[in-house]
Amino acid sequence: MRLKSLEINGFKSFADKTVIDFMPGMTGIVGPNGSGKSNIIEAIRWVMGEQSAKGLRGSTMSDVIFGGSKNRRALGRAMVTMTIDNSDHFLHTDFDEVQVSRRLYRDGQAEYLINGVKSRLKDITDLFVDTGLGRESFSIINQGKVEEIFNAKAEDRRAIIEDVAGVFKYKQNKLKSQNE
Ligand code: ATP
Ligand code: MG
Image (cartoon, rainbow, N blue to C red; front, side, top):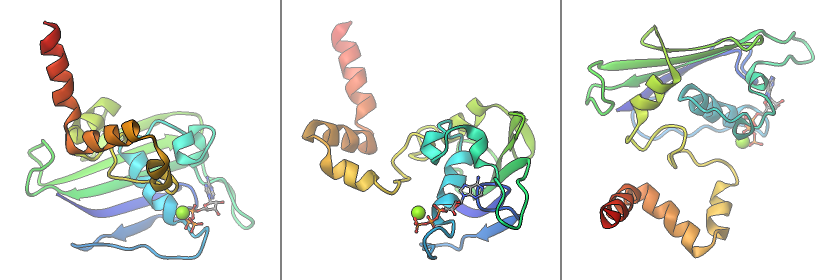
């Protein structure tokens, strides 16, 4: 599975439709402060179903819609589409290529699409469940998170490592069977 491209339109600082193609291998995104690097990562988290406005550095979800600049009026809609090469069927779907989209209008109307078909948030969440991706995973580490992990208490840090290693669900199963 591989992230092939990202289309950002009206999301945060990306007022114009912007398509980013990701080549195989590692990608680095560089640019001056405030140029939108973090906004790209947030677009990825958002399209995968992020529900926390605060987690996207806003106070309400409509803060992700381009809010205007000196020379440009605010827009009424944000849209992000992520295209994934799924030829190895890492995501549990028959599609070789998966396109996930999310749209949000200023009046609060919102929708998710999977390969152009209207879907529920649950469908998006299910698509990424147990893959190590998704909105609750540690595959995306925000600015500040590394410091938080270093400063965490030993038990909390252990919980993070267990979560990443996938040990957590076995621990829960063990507890459950001990109580039965
Ligand atoms: P740094 O190197 O400091 O981490 P960065 O490249 O990660 O910077 P971002 O944080 O992605 O930069 O971009 C911040 C910019 O995005 C700011 O100029 C901010 O005004 C702009 N921005 C954020 N939300 C919106 C919005 N809804 N509408 C318009 N611009 C926005
Ligand atoms: Mg940043």
